[in-house]
Amino acid sequence: MAVETRLIRLDPDAPEEALLAEAGAVIRAGGLVAFPTETVYGLGGDALNAESSRRIYAAKGRPSDNPLIVHIARREDLARVADASRIPETAWRLAEAFWPGPLTMVLWADDCIPRQTTGGLDTVAVRFPSDRIAQGLIRAGGGFIAAPSANRSGRPSPTTAAHCLEDLDGRVEMILDGGQSTIGLESTIVDLTEADGIVTILRPGYVTREALAAVPGIAGVRLDPALEKQTGVPDEVRPKAPGMKYRHYAPKGALTIVMGDPMAVSQYINTSISTARAAGKRTGVLASAETSDSYAADLVCNIGARGDEEAAAHTLFGALRACDEAGIEVICAEAPGDGTSGLSAAVMNRLLKAAGYHVIKV
Image: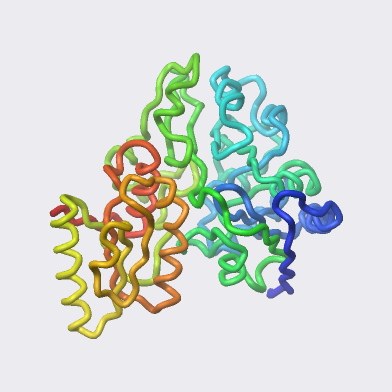
């Protein structure tokens, strides 16, 4: 059933308390509110209300075994949504280092969290965002908001309120507009449920593997096997965190990632564009600043200079949505950096999922 969606603009530096209270009332009543975070926009509902979580899945068209992240606005509330007796010291060390911020921790869930929120798992994913609007909404909404990204399932994640409205108009009660997300990629997700105390990265993000390993007292950091193989989670496996199993971030056009020597990459992409245009296809390229002028595609998206991983992260989802808006049918993307370390690992992770793991090495 369609609902009327209200779009409300807030000051990201000093969000108006009265407007946050209105949005919080929607959450407490079982409604849904899309809201900004420092990573991407989230689609929020009451994390302790099973029906709210069901509504989130329905609004997104999201498989119900894909876990939701519980957002909190106080560090100590971690012990209220996770089983306090099973929170390792590692979790508190990471919280001290990175919260509030773009890090999500998977821990054993407290009984107060419905299975509809955890995707049927005994674990819960928890994050404390740094965005002021997000924090204000969480407090106004009761302290515990379940929120995946505020887009239709499978589409590029939203980094503006306009993206949310495009995907969710008539599906949610309210969208809070706090401007463009500063980071542009979802949070890093780590699993802290293993008995050996090792931090396992389930989804790379702004908090890099190197940053995690540098925290004092951390026993070690590893990648989930699905990330190592860059193939995604098998169909028969229940994902432990959002974004692991299903196709994500995908534009409507066919996307190919091209890796190799920059000159060879440019040559391959230009040949692909020429072939596609000869066949009557609209073409697009996600390119570095150094090569963006060398392509004759219908749309060329400059995602930043080579080596500027933050620029690539900030612009990626907007570029994919721009391709959709321009009706692009064939898209080639230059691979971001080495794709294995630093923030480039997170950018490559999103590109691989958006491309269905279609990579050409030249």
